[in-house]
Length: 288
Image (cartoon, rainbow, N blue to C red; front, side, top):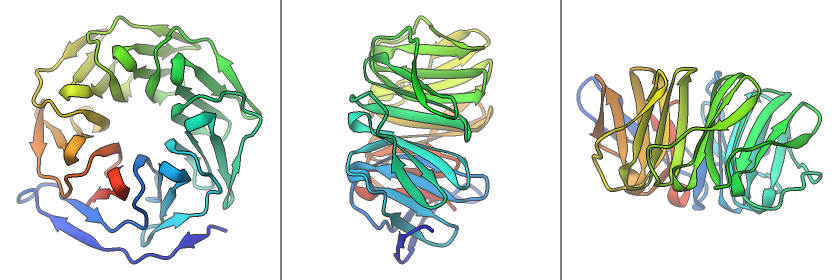
């Protein structure tokens, strides 16, 4: 059974203009930095962050759960309502099953794991420092051959056979039908976020306003609109998406362009997924 620390949910509405989507600031039960967010199809939301903090939203209350972890958690992914994973500093990786978090102490990696992605309860990936890649086969984690030496900071798949990871110094690697290969990057700046739209399309964001678009076999670096660091990208569909970043930056993809939008916070936003974003000092915002 989930042990949620009760917390009154408060929404501060911030208008972005008539007829447009509105981002709202939610009162948070923690003040620790929050790095990643995962939204399930049923509307439940999981958020992971510093000091082993795990937040859960059940459609009514945003509360903090007892994770039993103390390390900074940088990635969270749920394959189903009752099964999910977090990863983070010191190689920490833990599984949530039927109301309880259990750390996988057999995992031998001791450096930072930056991101994690699961398709179902038995198939998942994690990436981290030194370009390391790990694969979960339903029974145990094993190291997977990686073409990268630089730290991988982000990971996303559009299906089981097609995905991307990226990270320090602009490193980009692509997964296709069982193999990871490095793709010549159009930039040498750190990439913090990636979203695989389809086997033929993906978006990447990074430091100093970096935005990269991959489509039909080639990269395009978009003209910079900002020098702020960008941390996360989420695409609702090929024509609609959001980017989050430093100082609460929010950009909306509309009519083929990324357009700056009003934000309900000036705190850094590190993670974004399906209408939710999280960040510095416990910040949580959502589309209302």
